[in-house]
Every structure is written in structure tokens, then in C-alpha cells.
Image (cartoon, rainbow, N blue to C red):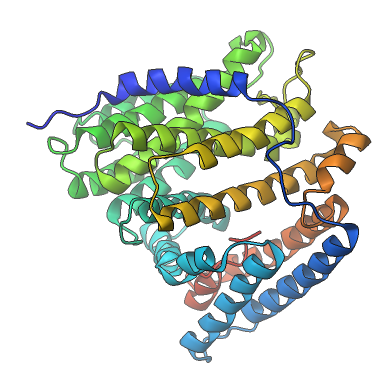
Length: 432
């Protein structure tokens, strides 16, 4: 039998490697290059308003009587122009997104999730879709066809179920621990009989993965799944309960948990895309997962602080400011995406440039929405590198949130309505 990398040992090494990289990353803005004048920002803000209004109207106006191809072309054109003209993304990279299967994957996933579970909520669909899109990017990086494979579907469905149960359900700690233990045993290959509706869904999804990747031929797939499960279980320590263990976590502990959770998540993505990974592939994917997790931590800082969830952006550390951590994250993004030598084809390089631009734009939005964490002077300095002003971004996200809530009502009325699913599938919020 062909030997393979010991992924459990690799995860341990990668945690240390990326912790050291984070600690050694300089907290400055030297990696940012493109500056925007107030006039340039205003021009892009007006264009973004037009894009949002036209896209919302297009989606609301779809009633099933239009020509699907023509309607889809109009929406793709809007998204393409938004990416190229407003967010300064490369036209070639945008074409990869819009023409190479991403939209088909999104539609197939949206429809498939509701076929699997008619009660799957729209918020859960978007949580799942984000992971499916990451797996699509990995497919492109690896030169593979962008498609919704059984494993892309199953893995993207798994964690909204477990996250919602562990984070939001009224189940006792004992019940949550029991679910984790039984889910771990199923991931390890035990043929358990489901004892609840949730377990039935989780076990069915694992079965879908097993059909694509037989365990004896693809052991790395299941090592990756066990790796993210371990990280998920460990992340429970970040919940700050009075008298609980998390209140005693050090800053390095909090960082290490985020590194493990983010890194293992995208590492598992890669395993499920390809079946087995080289050391270089594993290292890049782990690092990309780390930067996405830290971006999540920044985006969720306000909510995490309210909920008592500890991250480097929501917990108090007298020795490290939010500004230092934000600057380090900016440099860290460049270290991961500019420094990679594993995926070096022209197409892969274009995809990485798109990923970097997209991540930095999302980061600017996160800073804008968490402005009370920063000094006014810092915000003015960073805002020069944002294509839109922070005041505009805050208002824009509020506006889109209201529109999204209206569309969720329509979903609730007709949860299986194909035209509306297709509207989302083509990506209104994908670029924003």
C-alpha cells in the first residue's frame, strides 16, 4: 500500500509553524500598496450603489418567466463589472469565478441542500456555501475541474449542523459531549446506528464521503476530518464561562486554538478535493485556513465580545492592541498568498491574487464595522487603502443586511423556489 503523510503529526507541526510565523510578522502596513483618494472612493461608492440596486432589482424581478440564460448573463455581467471596475480584481480571475463552474456549483449546492433537508435555513446555506466556494478555489489551484463532487457537498453541509447544535442549542454539556464522541467514532469508521435526527443527517453525510473516498484507499481524507473535529472540540474552550477553563486561557492559547481550527478546516477541504495531499499543498492550505479564521475573528469581534467567545480580537490583552493585530493580519495575508511556491501555474497565481484582493476588501469592511476598536488616527491611516470609505462600508453592510432579511422572508415562504435559489446561486453576496 502506498505510504502517505501522517496528517496528525503534520497538523501538530503546522500549528507550531504558523504560530511562529504570526509571532514574527511585523505589525505595519508596508505590504499595502494601492491608495485611494476621497474622490476615487466616492466614485466607487456610487458605482457600488448602482451595482447593489440593479442586482437586487434583478433578483426580485425574477419570476420564472424569463429566459434563464439571458437572466443569468445579466447577473454575471453585473458581478463581473463589480469585481473589475469597483474592487479592482483582474478580469481573468473574475472569468475563472463566473465561467468555470462556480455558479453551477452554487446552484447545485443550494438545490441539493434543500433536497437533503427541506428545513435547512438560508443562513445555513450561506455558511455552507462559503466552504463550498473555498473548495472550488482549491479545485482551480490544483488544476482540477470545478464541480460539486459528493464530498464538496457533504463536507460543506456537516458543520452548520454541528456548529448550531454546539453553539446555539439548549442541550446540556453532557449531551453535547456525547454527540461529539459518537460523531468522532463515526468519522473514525465505526458503523454506528443513529440515535437522533441530527445523528442520522451527520452519519448520512459521512456515508456520502465514504462512497467517493473508500477508507482504505484514502486514509488522509479521514485523518483530515478527525483533525477538524479535534479542533472544533478544542475551540469550545474559547467560550468564556465564569469559573470555566477559558477564563484562564492565555493569549497564546487563544491564538493556537484559532490557528488549529482555521488551518484544519481548509486542510480538510483540500483532502476532500484531491483525496491526498503533498506536504507543500498541506502547508499552504493550512496557512490559508489560518488567515481566513483570523479574518472571521475580526469580523465577529463585536458579537464574540458580547457572547463571551474569546479570540485575539475580542479578548483583552494589555500587551497587544487591536491595531497591532490588524496590521499583523494584513502582513500575514501577504506572507501566505504572495510567499507560496507550491501553486505556481499562471492560473493559480491569478487565483491567489484574486483571493488576496477579496480577503483584503473583506478585512476593510470588518475594520469599518468594528471601528470602535480603533483610534481615529489609525482608521484614517488604514482608510486610505480601502476602495470605499469606512463610513460608506458600514452603511452599505447595513443596507445589504436589510435586503437580505427581505429575501430570507421570501425563502421562508417558498423554501424550494428554484428561481430564487438560482438568484442566490449566481452570487449577489458572493462579491460583497
